[in-house]
Image (tube, rainbow, N blue to C red; front, side):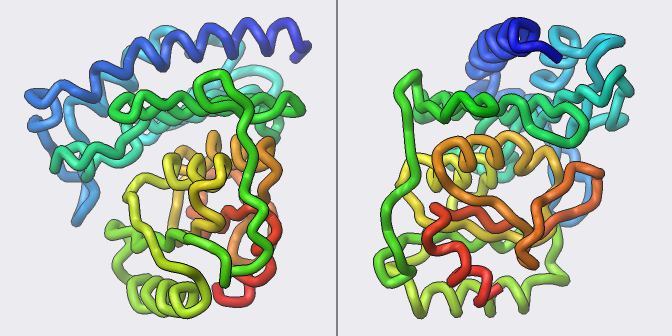
Length: 259
């Protein structure tokens, strides 16, 4: 895909995502809840946002992978939109105002663009490959903390994968012992953006799906940070769950040793 086409797709996607932001504030739709499993919910907001963005973005040329519904739509040349229509659905249900729309564009497994919009905070995080990362149009970068002893971190508990709880809380305690403190937001995309703009130095969570981290990965990396799995390898978007570690890069190896 050439740069002109990338820019046109990116600009159109930013407009589409921000236009959907107000839909997350619809309390009536947020109260229409179905359960996909224990602690795994979908609301009418998730479905409405996904359908609207699919209608605007999906095409025969570009595939579409999203959390809700029937999954992936094949496109040509390995180009794929990856969408989480509401990251932080449980937060949305409880009016805990940390939920976001997360959208990424990938080509042959590599990120080209990432867009994460938190309408409750009025914060739009964006990145393009090689073009830097931005918050509401202003360039952002990760923090300069060089050790966990200088850091604020988030360690996720992933309530939908409770069989990993013992290890999750072990990791949380291990990181807590070394850092300033732990914060828990409950939306992977937002937590990765907070790493990208220097509010957090590290974020770790097990059992995430591609739509949870696809956009956040590029935003962190373009802000100067690092994103890997717990074994230090790059995350994939092949549909399998990944254990994700995002950091400012400087504390990454120290965090890896605790995973």
